Amino acid sequence: MRFAFIIDPIQKLDPGHDTSVALMEAAQDMGHEVWVTEAHSLSVAEGRAWAIAQSARLKPVQLVEGRWVAEPDWFSLGDRRLLPLDEMDAVLMRTDPPVTIAYLYATYILDYIDAAKTRVINSPAGIRTANEKMYALQFTEVIPQTIVSQDKQVIRQFVEQQGSAVIKPLGGKAGEGILLIELEDRNFNSLIEVSTHHGKLPIMVQQYLPAAKDGDKRIILLDGEPIGAVNRIPTGSEFRGNMAVGGRVAKTEITDREYQICAQLAPVLRRDGLVFVGIDIIGGYLTEVNVTSPTGVREVDRLDGVRLGQQVIDWVVGEPGTRAMHNR
Image (cartoon, rainbow, N blue to C red; front, side, top):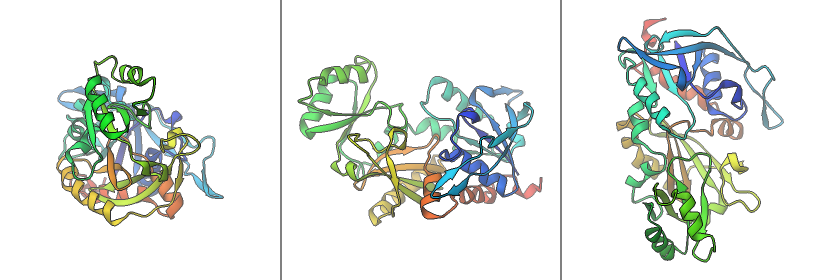
């Protein structure tokens, strides 16, 4: 089979951390062709989606003394070729957020892939539907107290009720722009003004969960089913547990409460074509649903001695929407 990965520039990826690399390695190890492209290299012609793509060969990372180690020349690329994406068996959209206008346009282009020939993961329409902050709001029974607003007074009233809160930009990633806010903070008004662009953009304001000091758990779901988890624990004076801001990772288990949350999400994720998803849970509460390029596979693999990438590729190969039966 042929797999196309729409990624950020491959030379900027961290092979010991990025889930996209883990998935590409898994596909290659299982005997499939791996192709890479970028969102700006997509186009539509004659009613079909095309991409300027390159074949990729990877040298898999090795686990050495508890950490992934990659060779300096860990990848090589073939010549650039213009290809119709429905000649691929699967296309995995793995471009990092923020979901800008250009990102949305890329998902519209992916709508022109013939679904009878090629599976697109995650569904372009699903990505458009699932803002990674707001998508969780429909699951009211399992999220912390949350509002979304750009009005300073509304936000102030909410923080008064909660005592303290976390504010999040709706389009951020990797903990960027997330702030802990308290009423007595002399910068309160300025923080709201900066975060909302002076009232022009709504932000998420969420009850602060003291359990955050014990970790922000990332659970990876495949077709609605949890397949692995890792706990991300804040370090030093940082209240965010995101790996991108220095959070340390630790082995963890999925609790009964968390399985219940996954079961509640599963039918909605399947409805929206969101196959590969990472959810964030703090103290038994769902805080985010990550659908663009969820990460964590390398960390789960290292801590649990598993290969989640192979599970994902196995699932894709077994899907009737792909062309595995064509013996390409």
